[in-house]
Image (cartoon, rainbow, N blue to C red):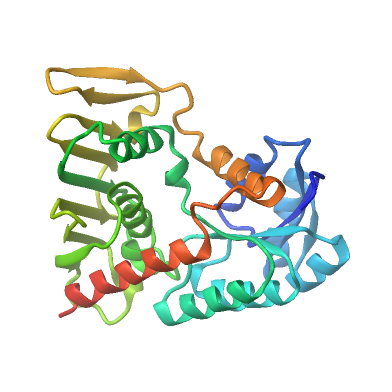
Length: 315
């Protein structure tokens, strides 16, 4: 797409919508969010008034009337497939909230449709754009860590059960699994997994989960996500034979780094700005043909690993 101001609409006016509106608002010369849609008219109208947008209850009407170049799908995950397939047939570019879908079958249908459409389909795995995660990823890829011995990630909050999101496996867990894949690479093998409550028939019921995986070179990879943790916790730790790093999201402006001799605090100039960096990447892919690092095909791989974790946890 030529360098012009990209017209964007938001589908879904829930809690995550403002984050995307504000992020795209950080690049006013390059894009403008002009409209928002939700099946609950009052919610769409509220967001529209708050951000000076036009409100709709029909996203197809919104795309047509506003002549949109792109949409951000911010609906509950169960609706991602049907909305995305409609948007793809209309030739509109997509930034879709995570997870891609609730099942691998649905995710594959979305990836197949995207492969046939000449549009950008990016999935909002925003943690790939967090400054500390980018630094760790680049350092691991360059060999600075040496052989990796272990990886650990805990994403926990006190939100508890949140219907329509696939529980904490698909909610916080989708981010956790995607970060692990991003830093450690593929393939991953699921060695053990557990849900709380155990062996659920509906992923929406998953309050906590933990999983032990084996990385592509035999590394120990531990992931935990939960919804009953007082105060919450969000930590990524990567240990190598030469270098180790630890990032606590509650200390967004610093991370801990060990060069093999001592731990030190590293200042982060852009910690916590992942939504803005994600929006920039979407625009760079759309306007400058940059390769998308979180496209629908990458998101499908994360979804496949999530499904493997669920299978082991329920076995």
